[in-house]
Length: 424
Image (cartoon, rainbow, N blue to C red; front, side):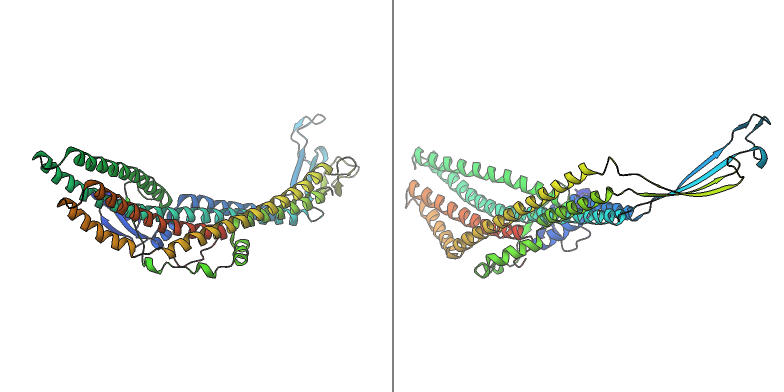
């Protein structure tokens, strides 16, 4: 256990706000989870390296082509029977240097494509950040409200277990009917089954949160919502057109489509430039093979664009430009649809939440205590008791789910527009 504690402390040393409630339980707020996520998430780290990789490609595109060197030496002079002769009168050496010069501004066009590739890698990184951050926050809320629901089941099961124990004793004495005791045990079993299903959900949420935070699977997270009453965003002040504009500015997946369209246009420009042949400059030194010794010459070489004018690649690039623009237009419509749907969900859940009487659960809680006391005194029958008991559980769980649905819808709207609209 000490080793687990030391490991957990080591994982969270960069975040002093995270505290340990027990040796393997972590209490953390949403802000602390966000900080831990940005610092330790492995997917983010891997994708960030992709940006650095594309910057390296961008640097490579800036470099000039290397010159080429050609050296020729006579290996054997048959007249003098010398191997590798070096004397001027009986040997021959040729030295050539070539340099390729890209014409039609090909180098700058390739550099522009590389820079757009870096932008695309950056878009992928920030879109992954948006997606994982959404998963983190929704999982955080799911786990928090699931733990709140679990406390309701624990309370009800504990109370009902005591009641069953008392009535088992009364049944053994012959004071109550078997059917009443059986009803109580059946309802207790039903509560235990529902609790077990909730525990499975909690296990999944815990595992997902551990992966997102790159934490040990042995750590149990206990989310803490600070100042829940302050989480009352002014949903009525949101404007759908403003949300569209925010999505245009902040959705990096949409920006990736636009950057892809830009890169396709750059590729079309490059393919047209590739139809222009490049120029090759050459300098030659020939020691004895020419009509004069120590010959020095310069030359220029260029391919003649007679048959291959890069027609196929230009045509394909033009098609890709059209395709990428259509894909961008289609995805823009999809983004607007996402924003509109998320906005409608926020309005619906927020309206339902604000119309709910939040004193209802407290009043119901006090009522059920009285009902339990009266049932143990046998002032009410088992049917009425279980009806109140089930109504209390349902109201608590439904109100808990209502709060979770509200927070989930707010996060879905944040996800749709690509930025946080509300106070954390």
